[in-house]
Image (spheres, rainbow, N blue to C red):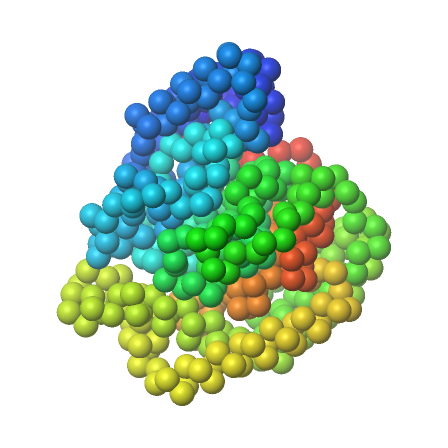
Length: 468
């Protein structure tokens, strides 16, 4: 995209397309050009789709010129993570074991974004089967951070976040089975929304079907809400799909937050955040008080860290999908991923189901917790950045591949809606994000709080396009 387009929100681009001030073809050409120009440095894309994208852009432009009714996302470029199916396009899930797999049909979120007029320019990189919260895989190599090429953008929606933060597209589709939308949004200064489990349908079935969400990654909360609004809603192909009507998330962006009850927890009871993260979160809590919210410090949300419950469920699902490769073609897998799959596959049935029932008990305790609060405020991550090539921060080496993130995976176990927004910058110059978690089906409160907080920050606080 050109510098002018870089600074525009998806909502603004959609308005200008409808007004015939901006051409969908020009937008798409700019997005493709920047994606190609940054591929050797950022490595954000698994595959680009220039012919398909330009054909869709031409059709979108023709619809504008004919005065046809336009979709919610009409003419705006976007990308989809390689854990999502795109018809006729390679669907590898970041793995050499699936390198030649081709999807037969679009995932519902891709299908709906296209139906709303958005232009798909390509599929973005992911860690293997979404198993790591950093941006590398044996298939695609290392994806880098637009603010600092020696840092990871986070994962597993690595390429999606890197491309949005670099100004290639204004928003992107990611997936989140343990934090994979929220984590890279936090690392790259972006806004992200994970709606309640089942609110955005997931199909074909994920390797982690009871944890997986499709979410929105954007440079501001309004654009993330716009994308979620377009892709949410019931779909019979997903057995967990929520049939209730989508809330008015666009209206939520201007609804205000006075008198919301917010539990502020710096650690959830077990996390170990860096001092910079703690300071930024304390400031965020004060901002919400200034906005008229009732904020209460809650040191312990969980009696114990639910990491083992999440690990048992997530890696057992992926391990089952990849068992034959773990056993016979281990060299194709990321060594760090193979190691955690070994542990998951070694569980016996009794031990696994004990954790399943513990998960249900956890969900009930969290439900009761939210009878006293509308929202939970916490960090997204305990650190502001992580060097490329590392899976775990050095001072958190006692944690596993995902448990070092601390804050995100509990709310995949419970399925609750959550959002992240940039809250500040650490001493190392890298962004820090806050997390807002709502009660079941409470996306409206999550979005209005995230939007209200974002509006207290300077204009374009989250936008820092990458220069080739």
